[in-house]
Amino acid sequence: MSDIKKSRRLFDVAKQYIPGGVNSPVRAFGSVSDTPRFIKSADGCYMTDVDGNKYIDYVCSWGPMILGHNNEKIRQNVSRAICDGLSFGAVTEIEVEMAQFICDNIAHIDMVRMVNSGTEAVMSAIRLARGYTKKDKIIKFIGCYHGHSDYMLVKAGSGAMTAGTPDSAGVTEGNAADTLTANYNDIDSVEELFIANRGQIAAVIIEPVAANMGVVLPKKDFLQKLRQLCDDNKTLLIFDEVITGFRLQFGGAAQQFDITPDLSVYGKIIGGGMPVGAYGGRREIMSLVAPLGSVYQAGTLSGNPIAMTAGLTQLKIIHEDENFYKKLNLRAGKFFNSIEILIKQYKMPLRCNYIGSIGTIFFSEEIVYDYESAKQTNTGKFADFFRYMLSNGVYTSPSQFEAMFISAAHKDAELETTLDSIENYFKSKQ
Ligand SMILES: *Cc1c(COP(=O)(O)O)cnc(C)c1O
Image (cartoon, rainbow, N blue to C red; front, top):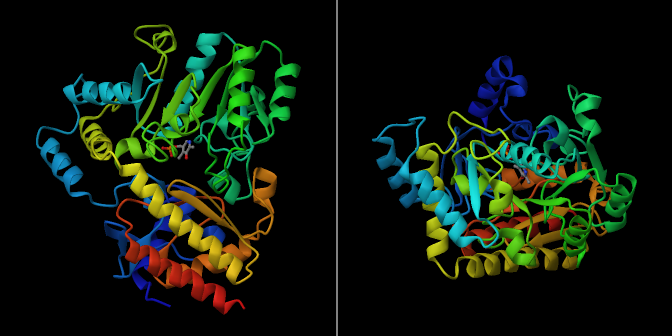
């Protein structure tokens, strides 16, 4: 076991002053019964903790660092922007550039509004959908995570699922009453809700590839049928692309599966490591947002110039490289496929779900296609695997119900080292 004295000490102090010692629950390593490593610095695909341990990082800040950590160009541009001041609370050129860049390069976005997190982007998109349709109810999918706003903390994934408390205290029945839940990959469950609530559904919100109950792929035609149901019922389809946007392809899952959502929500990668979220869509709908229209939404630090600089620099680096996604997805695909081969070779009772550069190793033999099947996994065995990998210098998501993220900075050497560690773990279980 590597020395983690400083992390232990810091965590003890942290727990006195911060609830659970963390500013976001899953960082506490609770479900894997380990001490969170306090990170001092990161570069490329490596992170170094305060005790000097170095890890190959498969969390990538939960997705944003698709170019790897500490990208030189982003760092330079941010350093330069900081010299001009941190925030003005007034309009800036860089926000216009960001908005134009997104609208020019994502076919179904005519207008976009910047906010400060994925949570905020989801809240805003839902308010807009209700304002536009003049209907109240929202359909979400069990196990999908859309941030921590009250009415989205109903049968949510991610940390809420890890903790075994999908519904949060403090969310009133009134808050939750307009949120209807369907089963992921089960179009009949959606249709039933539409029938039982005819004319009342403002929007269906979905992670087009679910990544907060572990990575769960949409079945063939599921998203197409969802699009059709929304059209038939004059309901807006909202793609929460906080993880998949700029991840699977530049245009996210919408591009990958060739589906046009009415509204799209972004976060994570769009900020390049800074707190940014965004929502956008057709001009006709977005024109309802204040001050143009009657749906109010605001933010003191929205479109912050430093955050915009980090995000736009990252998006431009990705976009300038025509083969960016081809290369990244190929390398990641080879990696996840090698894991599948090892699983078969060592007859491990596991499954690997993956698409593009995200994937999850499920500690279950059964196919994982929704919340119920994801819950069949053995989280105790996952925790054992997690601790083994971490003590061998591989930092994966400290929960069974999250994705592993591969960045452009993960090269063959690191991926092979990781595969060796996985193979050694499998060998130790024979
Ligand atoms: C992370 C995430 C969110 C919330 O974003 P925050 O920036 O953490 O508020 C929303 N939706 C999905 C799909 C996410 O993965």
